[in-house]
Picture 1: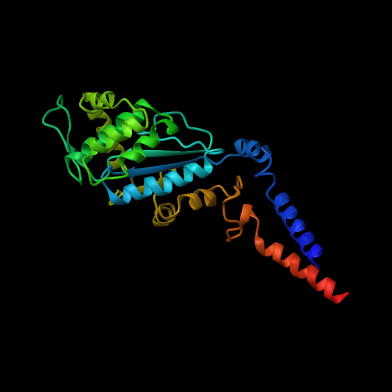
Picture 2: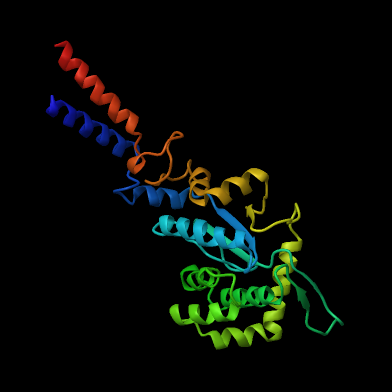
Length: 270
């Protein structure tokens, strides 16, 4: 009997591996994906001192990046000016519900942020870093690190994170205090204020410049699942749900159990 059960499990796993079209053991599917890719631009509008922004960046973006890193390119682009990567890119816009004015056409902008001046400073630092290091893997560790403890002074947290992630913080400070940093935050504000529908909370999530309640709800709750569902007709990942159920290595375990039951029936019958 045990041999029949083992055979059933083997056959079930074999069928599942075939069904995956090589997504685990072959690069063929990845090559096919690159030829027929669906570009996914995820915009994340956030604030450096917002608890909800913190949860989304640290929990959802970090988790998704770790899972998709071998296949999907994650790139943070402050104002959408860089070239599009192959697969998916995340456009982080550090601004949120801030506002801005200036005294004259030649003066710097004055910013008012939801969580005070410290948040405005943090938003500028993030924009300066993204401008300096356009590669996701080079800047996201510092960005997420600075949001781990939003209850303390931003600079105190940023100094610790700069040492941890080899970031030249003095250079960032120079940017933040200059007209360059001022203009970067202004541009982030312009991008935020051009949203349709208008942003009324953060994080505010868009996909290919579209925002709906369904996009917001699904992506904010589980970004990994959201990306899986958006790319399901293009590529299969081992950790993505298949046919509405989560299963080991992308296989539906119900099929394996069916084979075990079927073989038991044959043995008992004969």
